[in-house]
Length: 120
View 1: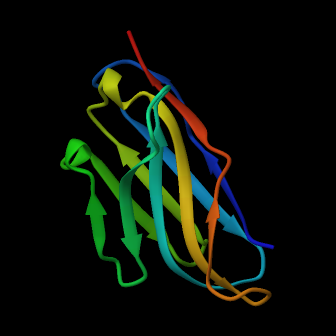
View 2: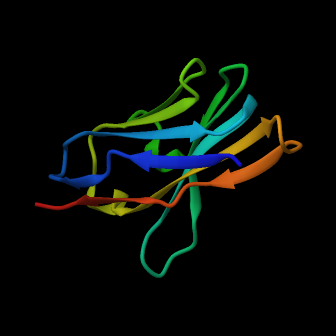
């Protein structure tokens, strides 16, 4: 069974930086796509950034130029470097993965979420 575990959330002042990590564990054969989503209170869950197996990335307009997604395939870990954080970035951040494991066909997985709060 594949599991995604996020870490790195916390409280940061406006203009500050955080790096989120998402580690995938289990009998992983290959990672097809990983992404970060976020959900603020009372709002829907939106995609923030994604990265494919070829390294192609995509970002929400609201984070372009401030956030960078990357992946370490050797460690099965995705990262989200967040710079110039704003109060409107406050949300629970979720890791998403589309992963092929030795036990299952290509499937989607979600992490449990990590809270990011941007406030002075």
